[in-house]
Amino acid sequence: MRIVFMGTPEFAVPSLEILLDHGYTIPAVITAPDKPGGRHGLQESAVKKFALSRGLEVLQPPRLKNPEFLDQLRACRADLQVVVAFRMLPEVVWDMPPMGTLNLHGSLLPKYRGAAPINWAIIRGEKETGLTTFLLQHEIDTGDMLFQEKLPIGENETAGELHDRMMLAGAQLVLRTVQAIEKGTVQPQPQADVEATHAPKIFKETCAIDFNQSTAQVHDFIRGLSPYPGAWTMLDGKTLKITRTEKMPANANLPAPGTYVSDGKNFLRISTADGFVEVLELQLEGKRRMPVRDFLNGFKF
Image (cartoon, rainbow, N blue to C red; front, top):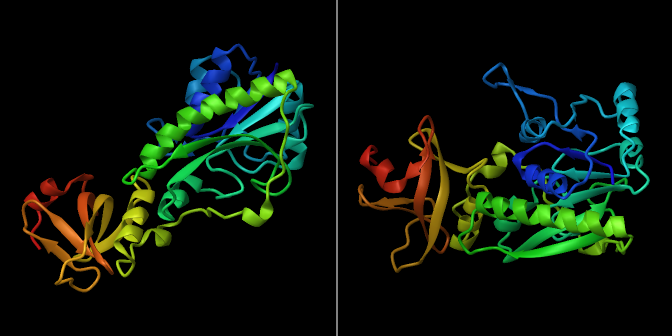
């Protein structure tokens, strides 16, 4: 089977690797154009670096409707296209191969459709998430589902930690789906749109911590944005990103939400609506990320 693979970040690399390791022919890999900022002035995507290391042809079209790119894509004679963490495709692209185009999404669709499903599942306190393979159609993340894999979310697990688990589980699910398509044993199931929830793109303003919420909500918000882009608050006029916390129950003398409580050496707690979050790891503007004790060694409230 000939498969054109489309993806950009590290999350997509294991899926490409597993297809290669199981003998599938990859005539081309489609990834994002290089970005400014690398060692040589441009930064290559994780998928591009891996694809080149395996001797694959890499295409980086700035526009997916570009006639030259579409001609290159047709010349690949792909039976199937596999998309993992790429971008929205025009119909002329996703409808090209005879077996269609499958996408791997980081949630149990139709829950958390959108750009940031891993982050929002944690922010909203979910105890379980998962991965879905589905066939692309017009509206984003709405195509018929092929397979799903459920994953528990740990009480203190961060988005970064969950991302890494899902990255490996997702590769296995992509392989399972491709093998089923090849055998003709898939049974696509329509999504129940009435059950859909959304996971919109996250911006800096989205990441401001509201300590007027409950301890559980603040804790989930912080770990859902950790390590990147990072939940933040302000301290002495500087941005303070908090990347790891623990929940602490309320006591009889609870200060106003957002109050810092510290012995100056070992602990830093911030009050919420019903208790505290104990800060374990943080990053002050202009500094590296560090454990709270290292931070307290050089900072005086």
